[in-house]
Each structure stands twice: as C-alpha cells, then as structure tokens.
Image (tube, rainbow, N blue to C red; front, side, top):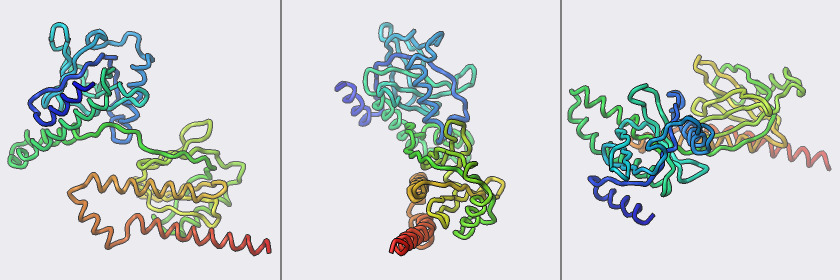
Length: 354
C-alpha cells in the first residue's frame, strides 16, 4: 500500500516514470455506445462491474492472463497489462482511446475502463480486482489525461491548418477528459401523478395554475397514479409504483416550477424538442413544498454544473447572473407565491378554529 502511494506521488512529479499496480482480470463485457453518455455511463460501468465481479456472467468469460495476477502499468501513452512471471505484455490500450473509467460502488477494489475493441469495433468494459484501492488507479488515470490535454493543447493551437492535429485534440478532449463516473445524488418522493397537459407558454404561475386546475377537474382521484419521483441534478424520473417508467424529464429543459392554488399540488413545465410546452402535475401529501424544494435544488445543481463545465466563461456568466434574472430569481418568484399561500392557508385555519 505504502509503496503504491509512493509510486503515485513520484509519478506526479516525474511523468516519464510509469506506475504499476497488481490486478486480476475479471473479464470484459460489451457496453452499448448510447450508454456512454454523461448521464448513463456511471450506471452502465457499475452494472458491468457488478455482473463480472459478482459472478453473474462468470461462465465462459475470457480473462486477461486467465484470471491470474497481472501488473497494470500506466504511463503517458498506454495502459499495459504485463505477466509478472515472464514480463511479457498481455494486453495494451492507448490512453487516449479509453472512453470512460470507474470504481465499483460495492467493492472499492474493483476498477473498470471502457475502450473500443480493435477487432469488433464495439465498446468493451474491462473489469479488474485490485490489490490496492481502485480509486488510486482511477485518480492516476485522471491525472494522466489532464496532463496530456495541457501538453497537447498548445500544439493544436499553433497548427490549426493541420487537420490531423485538430482531430487529435477533439478526440482527446472528448474521450480523455471524462471524469471518474460517480452516481448522481438523488431523492425519491412518493406521490400521485395526475398527468401531463400542454400549455401555451414556458413560464408563468397563471399558466401553471390553469394546467393544474384543468387536470384536477378532468382526472378523478381514483385514476391518479401512485408514483415514485426520482429527482437528480440531470433528470426527473417518474415511475409507477409496482410498474414501469412513466416519463423521464431532463432538468436542463425545465422552464418553470411552482405550487398550485392547493399547496398539495406541485407542477413543472418542460420545453420539448418539438417546441411545445408540457406541464407535469403531482399531488403530494401532506404538502408539495418538499417536492418543489427538491426540484429547485436539482435545478441549482444543474446550473452550477453548466458553470463549472465552462470555466473560461465563468466570470462572464457570473456577471450576467448578478445583473440579470436567472434560475434562482424565477424559482424564488414561484416559491414566494407558495409561501404566501401557505401563510394564507394557516391564517384561514386559525380563523376557522376561532
């Protein structure tokens, strides 16, 4: 353990020296390219780790070195698997061809990376059991990719007339800059889903209230769907309890959020790809305030991610937010009306008791 950490520290100071880790191959399995997006890659890689490390697909699975202990060597060019007895190279992968990598959530010593197979041209997830914490390997690989990007970017800027250099930079940025997959924080709220209805505009508490009242009047309570709403910074997923998925909404396309005239009703408006606006309506006991606050937090986290991803424009974006109206202002307006209704409702209840 100490030797490995020392090697990692030395590697950071002197990038010419490779770092070695003791690993055992658990095999590899195919991952669909559409599952390698920022939203899906973490779940896809973790599923592959669970399948191979947990023995779900252990039968007839090929393993590098037949599952024996190997040396995984990382340098600025390659990830190489070496037989410790003969020191022969068992397998190698170019660093810039590694699409994504991750660490097992159930076992911190499981490491995986995804790269395109040279023969089949399909994406394969290679899983390993490590003698040291897999996070050390993941962080080392991350540092290599960061260093490569810093080294290659000036060369690309000085040779814009060379198409191959530009292509190499784009490929490096797209494939190597992906962070270690981390499961998004999310909260599950059980409620009743009334349905979805089209609205004429993207924002407005009056627009939202009209949509809520329309669905409340059209859909009888016995037809409301008991649902679990999973709220994360990137998506809001509506699943029927005991059934399948009803809808999945991208937070980036959420245009308005608010509470209906009844504090038990929460709704949000989505801007669709067909340039329509759809309002999703929910009934939450005893109050929809918690659900609305959770969605508000998801919107803020999503917006912060956008700012972090565009660090070069962060100062300009911060200035625009300070001088203009942003997500927070719109959400505060919506929740201001919610608080007014809550206080009014409480006052009415107090008067009725008197």
